[in-house]
Image (tube, rainbow, N blue to C red):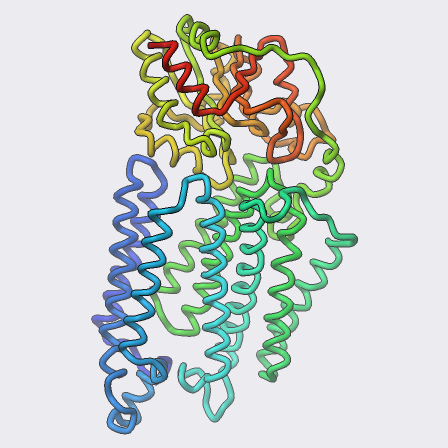
Length: 491
């Protein structure tokens, strides 16, 4: 592929695909335009895929000896494949994607995203390995010696891809409940992490001078290890930032491989994913009062988590209410702010919640929804669920836009959210969530808090002192059933 320039129509098609990806990213920045953005993304990927197949497929059906040396240089990347194998691979991937998309529950979406990131990382490693083992086929070697620039691209792509793969696997296991969400703190982890990262950088640099197998495979092995070491110390409260950061890593891995393959569509797409993921991670770090550098280094929030890890459910008196009590209080209110969390997602209560909001609005009550940037297990989790239930976009507000309104709100209705409403984030320095901006629900005249039981704690592993305050009424039940009972009472 490096041996000849792409035909102009191919370059133009890849450019159009890149524009579609940019428009997709722009559209996905707002719930109002998200569907249009998704269509642009699908169109861009379809253009890139069809262009690649049309450009290279004819070379697969012709014997190398018939092609001639010049054509063989261009098409030899795919000499080991057949058109049938490509079609079979696409069909298998399409079936897996369709079945997964139709069956996956919204509550499992965060771990699905983590799994997707791991596949992108693994793909980058496999492409780098294929290019290393057969560089002539990729047009990046002369006489068995790989071009120094290609070695840099290959080394970086393999390293970032390996980190993405192993880190995403750990994130998946934590999100899926196969591993504890609590931080696993290794002795001297910061020194170990920095040492391993420095060694990886040194090996990639040395790889430009010596392409020996031990250099390449050592860098790959250490990268797999550091991905594990970076994510294991991170607790559940910080997992949304981890998912966002791994998304960024997967983009940079794809971009690096795009340079190796000289594929402009991969470079554009990877750069878009990498930069947007990094920007989103930065925004979320600010929302959680975390250091962006510590996100990249791994283990952020770990020391605080260790200090506050003993926090469990507190045996203190609390006020318990019923669906009828909640319905009466909200019907008498002028304004109700609903705060959804992961518990709403688990119970699939978003449709009943929207129905409750509609009934309150018929009673003349102002209804708004407050979304914390890291509510749920991935960025935008609550926004997607509310959009699925057709909650009007103009009723949904981010933390910085609505926090000042709680002080003049009659009822704050918290459904399945814990850590993002915990006042300890502002007062308790030993808490793993200390310093994280939270929704000021405690300032409302009355706080209605739906929770399955008083025995559990939030994903960060700490109890919420808000449960025991005088202006809080606990509604202990499954979130969906409680909201449905409130709807009946309102009707």
